[in-house]
Image (tube, rainbow, N blue to C red; front, side, top):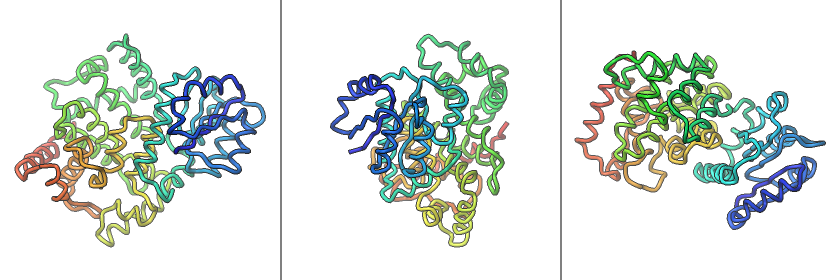
Length: 398
């Protein structure tokens, strides 16, 4: 049973949460602490899977409490729930909070967020705590990108139209420029060039725009990385996303396959930024021993970039099929077989794109024939998909 700690200095807020979340008592062990000092005393003797805290509290505030949790309980998922988010306070919480929620918060949304945090932990099977230990001690774990977050809020309004979404995107012209560059690339095979954001939104649809905005923001915010080309990584992500979308037999899953393809290597960005020495060690070991890079990462760190990336996406609140695909895109055999789904599409797209762009690079892996057989993929189908991947590779990027 997952242990959840809720903290607020106003008892009536906690009573409201207790009533709203009562139905979860059979799956969650919930503790409600009045104020930061009471919560701090609990954290000195107990551990929790998820901590949900108010920001502005007398004595020990939310940022101080989450900082203590980060230092002493790095495995805990840390969430700020507050109606008081002035810039100074928000900046204090950025390094120690995984998610920010504002009051009043919809009970179902809060429940889903906590549930998703628990699901991600279970999904990644982090029995020895290596993953959460690493994630918990990263000082600059990226918060959910600003424009993407605003876009998600806008799309929650049924009345939002193309002009509303375009107006929001235009607040960041760098994102607009990159979005137009991507939409006019060979990956979308447009008959004519799109020259404005309104037209891009109209052509792509809200879901595709949302997916692309998140990816653009992720790569745009990344710092220059030692030993890792951002342009090459983004190009690979786009190729994998486009191919995964085409491979996905269930068209209702195509958008998730595209998003998972775009973000499947986000863990590599985090590793290159936050733990570059260990990443370099893993790359060297993969080249020296001729094992796949993810296996070398496991040997050095106990986790791989796939699990790190999936954990971050879970904290950002992305849908479960995307998190599952990112977490297991090197080892889909770990997941109970459900036919050709998002995970299968991303796994194959990643390896087929890799085959056709850089055949057998150091640290690469090969397609598992036993896994293909379990999916019912025939040699003829695989040959057709290789042709699709090769076709993408031979197309110019612009």
